[in-house]
Length: 192
Image 1 (spheres, helix red, strand yellow):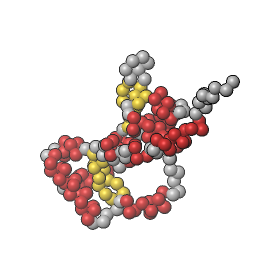
Image 2 (cartoon, rainbow, N blue to C red; image 1 turned 180 degrees about the vertical axis):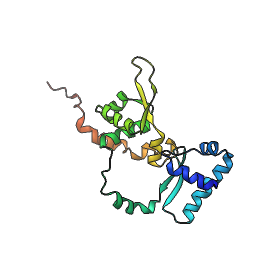
Image 3 (cartoon, rainbow, N blue to C red; image 1 turned 90 degrees about the horizontal axis):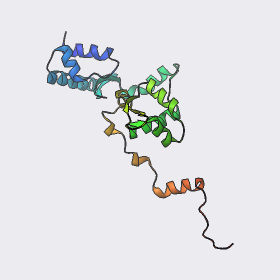
């Protein structure tokens, strides 16, 4: 069987992106040969205008549907119940992604509400995982994102996350937004 055919079969049954080194080990072929064939296969899918694309994301290679097929796929999947993340889970995921490693207490403090349920949901879906424990008393579990998180967002690494500063308003806007929630400052009026 040709190398490309075996790669294609492995990609078809894979649940997660497969690192090139794993392909090379299983196929008992040199890594550079496998990498060249994966790149050539990705290019041929593109050149032929196929319904699939081969991408290297999340630490490995995986087949994806072509972005131009999106509208058709949405219609096809419209009748199925799509499990979406709640707003609380999305906020929690953002905190973990940008502040990792981070404890449950830190996430809750940043969000201003208890985040245990959202963390459990994200962990159950494989988007975050316990990656260690904090030093000191209590040794709280620390959370971080998983390779599945990178894959779902189409990122190769966390460095590709958009800069957080791009989404934070200027200091004067934050001050204006927070002003109504601050307790009044003591008056310096000396009249008694």
